[in-house]
Length: 111
Image (cartoon, rainbow, N blue to C red; front, side, top):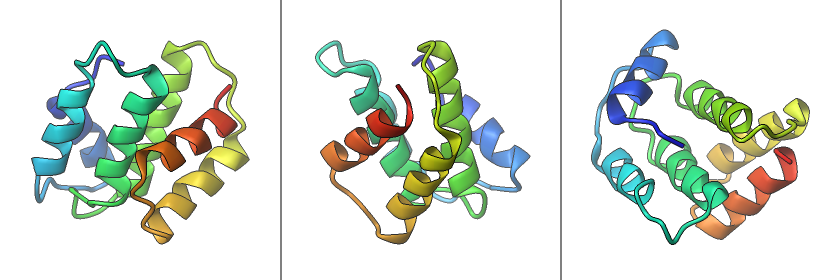
């Protein structure tokens, strides 16, 4: 997934979110450059940065959902929207930090 911090900030602004802290986003975006990581794992790093670390003042869950939808579109995958929303809310509310757990949830919702 080719996405920049500028792109993510622009998405968040559409949901009334202002960037508070970009350190976790920077880390997740560095992971996007890795040739050793698969697409779902890269997505998991982005989602954790947004859903768990809350870099935006508002719209974190909406921003993460939008990014997951873009991912599915780019990868030409089918989305179970109800399951995706369930997983997004669950990751955020349960503060799930394990990349593997987030990755598996995304694989379950986006096939």
